[in-house]
Image 1 (tube, rainbow, N blue to C red):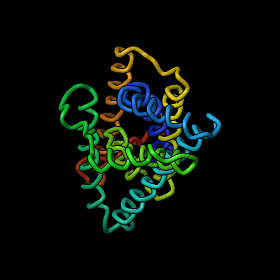
Image 2 (cartoon, rainbow, N blue to C red):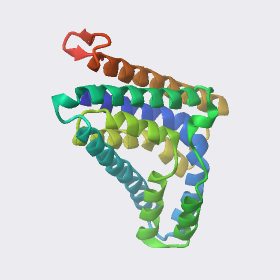
Image 3 (cartoon, rainbow, N blue to C red):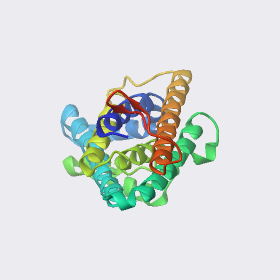
Length: 234
């Protein structure tokens, strides 16, 4: 997947996925954080921006890390076959995650209640001021989340370190409107709407996973690359 296509798909995935998944999973968490923001003594707008900036910064950092790993595995032509195999594996993983969001293979949605996360979260709730708010935002960026894992798989396949980082930045910005609405008390949407958006995000994951599989097969010369003008479909 090219850098522009990866960044665009990550932004759309973040935007759509947040309306379904994040409002359901992170909504209650953000309501707790909103109460903590009130206790921080900071202006609400400043603390909210600090919180989400820290969360998105962590996503971007994770994107750079997976971008480095992805680049190391596809630096030169002799590794083209290996790159094709990795692309197929990433595509399969992404497809499985998407199937989870579509309502199949629910055990593969990968969210969990990590004990270490809960312990750190409890400690950060006791902190006041900017450092406490920033810490909570950064911790949210590390919350075990299938949607984030899927985004990281796409970022890893984007082709470069910087496009992977930019892709995760775009993903984080896509999740911003829905979670900001929760912080501001306007994030109540119906369970039916959340399910629809979650399934839409799952369908996007499956499509991107299929594209990665097709690209990997083409790299292995199982079938040919397909071009639409100058755009490489796979």
